[in-house]
Amino acid sequence: MAAVALAALAGVIWIQLWVPSQLRTALASPVVDLGTELGEDEVAALFSYVHRCTLLGFHDLPLKRLRATTNGTSGKSSSQPVKETEADLAREAHQTVLEENGGEWVSKLHRLRVDRIVKMLSRVAGYDASECKVAMLNTRQINAFSTADGRIYLTRGLVTTSSDDEIALVLAHEMHHIREGHWINWWALGAGDGLVFDAETEELHEGGVMSRAVEALVEMGIDALRGDASTSYGQEYEADATAILHAAECGYRASRIFRLLTRLPEMPVTSHPTSSDRIAEASKMLQAIEDPAWIAAHSPALVARNVLENAVAVARGDRSGIYVQVPGLDKVAAVCAGVLDKVENVEKDMRAYKWLGSSWPYEGDNRVVVRTALFSPVLCAVDVGVETTLGHSSAGTPGVIEGRLWLARRGGVWVVAFGQVLPGMRPVASEWTAVRDELGDAWRHVGRRAWPLSGSATPEVWNASGDVALARGALEAAARWRDTSIANFEEHLSTYARGRIEYVRNAGGKGEQGAGGKAFWNGLNSDGSLEAIGWAQFLGGRDAQSWAWGVRCDVHSPTLATVAFSSALSLEKAPIASNFTRLTMVLEDGEWKVASVSLH
Image (tube, rainbow, N blue to C red; front, side, top):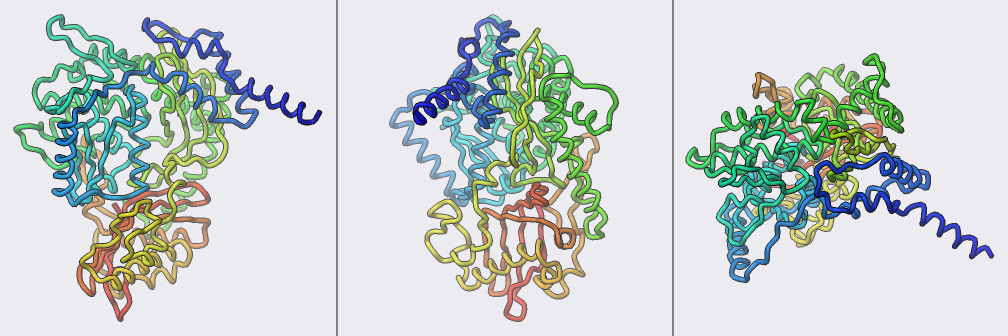
């Protein structure tokens, strides 16, 4: 009898977890009529379904099942059969690129990071993420490019010094080049999502979820999105505009394109417009997507951000008035407000330390973070939370996801239907929890063929021309420098070379002027030794934790070496920093010491 009762209970629970048939039918049907929207009954059924799953502890099940239901309605694949000769040419070109750029760079953390961003961009662009082939090159140059076989290349220098927002913009730019066939393709690539401009009829043809948004932007004067670029200049402007659109729809801050364009190398004027011209064109696009009417009709991610920002401000007492009263929004706003209060208190406390000046301020105008989790013509889910970073982030976005807003298209605009609080600590950079710390034991694996912590059988932890014993010593000293920085401040000071700290200049980096006169962080021209010491003093006695990945050691001489790694730092369980650190090491009295710290 007990077994029968348990089976019956399990059956009831299973039925409760199944997507309602009326909702499944509405979402799975092809959207032919652009006026198609979810009715009140479907929205009510969605709320009831999500609420049931939440009560039963299956908070993410609705998203997973609704993704499967809407699969195929956001766009279509652009893949075509590949001929054997074309595949051979692609492999040959790939090997040539690797040989000319230091080979392929192996980093499990950054591979997961890039894959996460590709999946999000593919979700809004409307095609299969598995078709996007991204390779990382082992060179310090800051660059990215794509080739005719549909492969995207990112350099180690770009990946380790760029924020998630910047990487999203780069990937979206190159993905558009490939989808639109801007290169001489070795096999046919479909046009993909978006609009195709017919030169004979001068009409825009619909081709996916984004088509309405693009058409509205074209009507607002963004000609670069017409899709009819015939020159390399036009193709670059078009790819920039599309990158801004897709990155914004995913929830990334598209305004980071200004910083990105100032860091990429100038390309030949015969094929690429100047950075200043590209910035001028990008400014037009950024202004267009900030239009309130366009946001309401075409951008669920920006709608979610605006609604939550207002709700959080009201919940914290920063703004008088009321916000849209939808189920669950007040709860999501309350948990986000709690995280925001903690971060602001930490930042206020941090600035009291003399070694921590104003060189690492938060770069954004607000801390609400959004990431598009489901994207369809009539229903969107947007994960929301708080960006907790205290500076420029280059190993993933420090922040926590606290809830999910479900948006439905009603009356021609996107509206928040309800909010859902998500349990536990969910870092925005989800790969942080999937990769173990790689610095602590790195020195033990130098000289071995396989380094298991890196996630690959062929990592490059150190330059093979150096001495194994020297590399081990430098890596062990670097691990001690990192570990003492969050545990013992006095011992941390002893890891520095004598006489080096006093002569550090330009501690904490150099501010430069960007577009519109705004200052931006230039970590490439900085020595962050005093900044690093300030962090160590600030963290003393606090509940802090640090991770490091993608470790690389270069032994330049018997007395000089550099150790570089991407890292993240949390305080009281909340991630507050991510960066790329390079330690310059010198041998002093037979022991490796840190001569200077560079924080990118």
